[in-house]
Length: 212
Image 1: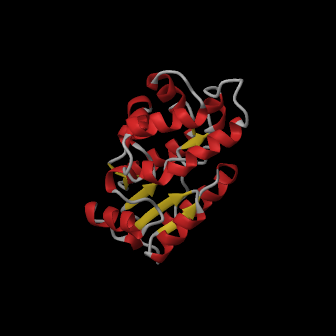
Image 2: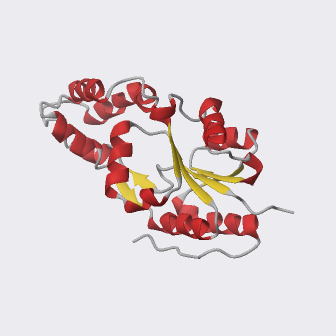
């Protein structure tokens, strides 16, 4: 018999918000520069360093601006860098539903200080979460087991009683290895998440499919 979950870990990117790096960052690349998509892709070279907190914000902005050929101010870069998000309101509803059932909801995300600060400031839903586990503060990124063990120890989690929602298969695989109750989320298959959640409680959850 499935026990009532006591906690739920929510990834952020492509679970609570859609991500679109290319469109806003492409606007920073001067028209005279060749291969704008390749320049944007090169920013991934320091993604792990940034999300593990190994590189400082100012250092990254300088480095990234050089890679893009962007001659503007750090403030202009930061505005574009933080313009990559679009809410997934249907999942905000689900987080609120779980909280209403007494489930502790926890943000569990590979992110960086710039994005984390912007999200917490601009989307009130993130303030509704009971706890946060951010990679840049922990010093480890998913699927490194260290960040999962940090979440378990810091928030007294029992993996078998904890739901874990993420969009990346490698992160889900690590969660399953550690005993969490996992679902790999995809916005196009939101109905599958609803069906899975029903099995975790034995009761139907809200069937909201609207994303507005």
